[in-house]
Length: 339
Image 1 (cartoon, rainbow, N blue to C red):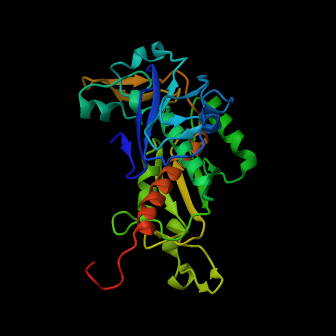
Image 2: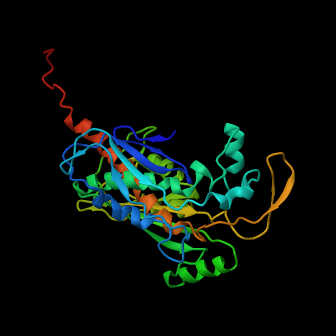
């Protein structure tokens, strides 16, 4: 399950402390203007070491395009994107070779595969998301040509909805060796009506699956979300007029198909599990142990998940748009004859 999508497919590769990470994009239409300089701004927003509110691990995360682009335009062939790792410090994780970190995938990976990369979590690390962001940048650039954009932002940190206090919440947790979570909102504008394939390919289901695949994301709401469960039908329904919908509790998706309104999504992101506070755990032999997680970690991973969430949403929309284009291109014979 390292490949995502149907018509617009990506395969990501690489581990936290490996030589490189990246993605292969297959299904991108030809003739789209694309260069590393177009992709880099997306990666810069996710890049570690960009401020004192994120992990101090510094990576330039410079992207290389190895294939699929000629004279500045996509060819319609697979696009290989490579991001080399520069500052991995694997020695930071020597003490964790036989220990399971609470809140991480260490134990579940070992139980599944019988082997794990203890260096920063290997494939389960947040560093894996750089490949998603690079691929999502390609999708976003394609979507822009159709007037579709995805914009994410932090709307809550540690239960606090006042943006002026977000930095304080994060720094306070960091200074105590702890971490905090947050809530991200996504607003998708310019999406045409008709995207999404019922019954099992509903657009909201695809978005939820894509966003829940991001490490640390523990909840998804679309439109009014859980608040809708506390409403009457008369309050929740979105009335219509000749000019369009009069409200948007559905979040731009009805029956799994886009309505043409803005698509509204919210993500709940858990606190970073790597913290400098003593915790109880076990080793690979099942013996009780205590652990303090060292190394370089984000006190709030929600900040750097924003561009990852945008990327995953863009991938879903690009895939759905290409799927819908196949319907638009299909012109059945309406004459009633056999030829």
